[in-house]
Image (cartoon, rainbow, N blue to C red; front, side, top):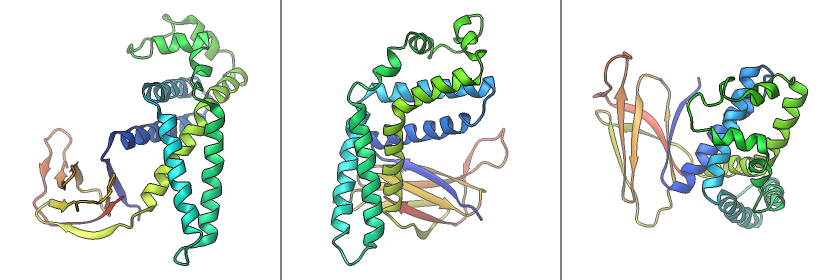
Length: 252
């Protein structure tokens, strides 16, 4: 039986990483299809990722986290309490990712932005329906050029962001694997966790075995609060479930 997982990042850096991760998964899914609407979806998602990566220095933050995890994995290889072979494998993956991110350079996004066609798409990116066929005949011409050309262009553009996105995927995997989920109970649909003074929690994960409620999670420096809500009928408001809810929680 699959679990239903809900997550809440507790800092802006992690929120950015998880938004990129979400969009990158959507991009990989749409790239598996060759029809015009899938290509449009791929382009739209690529531009969304570009917008996030261009707002802040995500590449620098990725390099910082890669260095941090490389240092940890190097330490683990000298410990008798961990699987040294697995730690070495992860370390090699991290070093490979860091090398790829280093090689793209600080101005890597210019490889996308400086293409006149992509720049015109970016210009209309925030306008709803702004890339309709009558607005951008050049875009329609490109879409009608066939999968050989569109696939080649997309592979080139995605290749620019791939090292950073792949690194974010690995960083988030390591973060999620850093803490084991524990079973607990929300009394009358409410659960509070008091955060210890020096704890370094950046991600809250909730695991539910059934999809009959969903959690509303709020987190601060001192307290993580979870309310379990019931929404059984679409056109009705959500209400807090007053039953005791068994679930698992992981604080990463």
